[in-house]
Length: 263
Length: 223
Image (cartoon, each protein chain N blue to C red):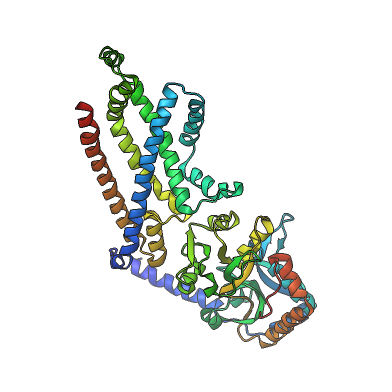
């Protein structure tokens, strides 16, 4: 067989294989969940504190707690499916899971393929510092020193908005950035809220309280396109959990901060 | 596909690169002058066993010659604040450079002093040189002349090693290179340029020190 013919047949085979998976079954997922009494939820397993495997080999974290909360409200048994950030959307679009609760941010590209609930978890980059530092906006950074990891989102954003008299000290990696702040070499630190939570948990040297947000990208529950019934139900559950304080409790447990009021 | 070089970023960052070069040279010159001064003091103390300095110098030299420069830098910058000694990044970088170079030059200069031929000392004695004169003209100057190439090499090594000061946010040449690279993502061009600058600096320092060795030390020693 000539190479060109081989390639042509391979391409044909590929097309057939793709065609057989492509049509997504458009069923009412909520009805299926109620009928079967189980819900399959994709959660992270390599992204603490949102989801990681605990010492008992079971996944634990913010996202897992939210998954269990939604399962309980729906009256369904939760089946956790560990996913990575690369394959979580394919798991949803091919119907392998009903929901993705995997610290996922909203983006126009993603919104073309899947739907989102209301936000359920805070995820942002911001400027943090000790409680007694009076800083509430970028202009207040005048004359202050801020440590930041070079080339990170917060570095790029802060470099644009910080006043000229602010000293931004750029470090190679997160550890040096944190060490510079903890050892008192800088007055403030710009980092993600998840990193700040981890530092607060492990070190009592100097606390990190949020001063202002540099870039906000909260987490949403991902659903397959067109599942309006399920989307409505999930939104209702998230809203209820926000009101009752159940979500705040989860935030306190894993991120050590109160749920932001504007979430 | 052939790689498309793009050096158009250079004008935008020329000022920063210049500052980076000046910072690196500053670290090297400051570290070199003070380091060699520390080295001369150390070599004398060690050779004539002047207590308590010889013991202190021994600990210091062993400590700094047997630990990585980066760790010394971290200890000074991140560690000392816990003891209440807070040095900002350029002070920490300078101190680390001086201490590191001081330890190495102590050993280099000591070797030079030790290699003074006995006959030379006896000759000085027979010519009724005072102890001071003997030390400066018969021992130190010929010793420095002998070890000058080794000291020059050590200084160039220290200059190249100062690149790790970028890790504590000291804005020397490597910091500037990393900064530019994190903004334009042109890693090849940025580090290519940085390599060329470092190479130029190293050659320049070597030539300069060679000239100093030839004119300042050799000629004055002969006169």
